[in-house]
Length: 322
Ligand code: ADP
Ligand code: TRP
Image (cartoon, rainbow, N blue to C red):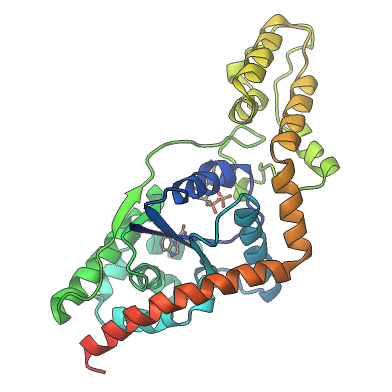
């Protein structure tokens, strides 16, 4: 049984790009009977940039509700909130005291963030140590992350190696699984869908608002009667990711045949979203209306996570001489 672990930063309601690019594939991976997945909401990492308590809480709930609505199995796996297991800070201190300062000073993501922000807090600097602690505290074997996290994973391995070198075999060196697949979901303006570009589709919105987002997808000015090229159209690109092969073929024929406007295509996309994600939309909203259910799931996960964490910490404390 391989133990897979990954952290999810919570920056609001997950959009269609987050769902198709990260959440749904991770849930699929977690279904393998040979794996045990630990997925957590990295709300302590969020604190490096978010200092609004209400926003922090809402982001956590929205992120958790999306994972749960898409069927992440919290009985087979472990789903928790990073801040519920404060043990992670204890291990972080032990790792801090074994980590050379220049390793952190040279991290790309730190240099990048530090160059853009007015106030650079120490949390941004030690961010990779907290991330290493997230991983090593649970004896994780495989850590699936995007390319941007590659250096953080290398640092985690270096920290585990250094600790083991000093104290003898204690921490498991995790294997990273960098997702090289470039499945970039386009946004309503054709760029990568992202919260920061405000070009996203939030499938959990009420019908009218969702329809408005879909109707806002940018298209060219080819007149209704003229044939159109589906491959260069943002509506078709998104539709193709969600519709069946038959529906996609039909839309392609409609584009090429003429007398089919972008408004028709947008309406078809809206309908496919409503139909395909009917259950998930209901479930998400039920959870957001009753956050006690989300709390219950997260606390169940925290209990399981804590028991692994405490065992690992016991091992570490003995080795360092406590
Ligand atoms: P955003 O750009 O909206 O802030 P994040 O950087 O928080 O999104 O991404 C969270 C996860 O969702 C990451 O694993 C990222 O790779 C994935 N993701 C985000 N946007 C897209 C997209 N347009 N297509 C595919 N995956 C995406
Ligand atoms: N830093 C990661 C990101 O921004 C999130 C994260 C925190 C993480 N801790 C982790 C990912 C541990 C994998 C393992 O995406």
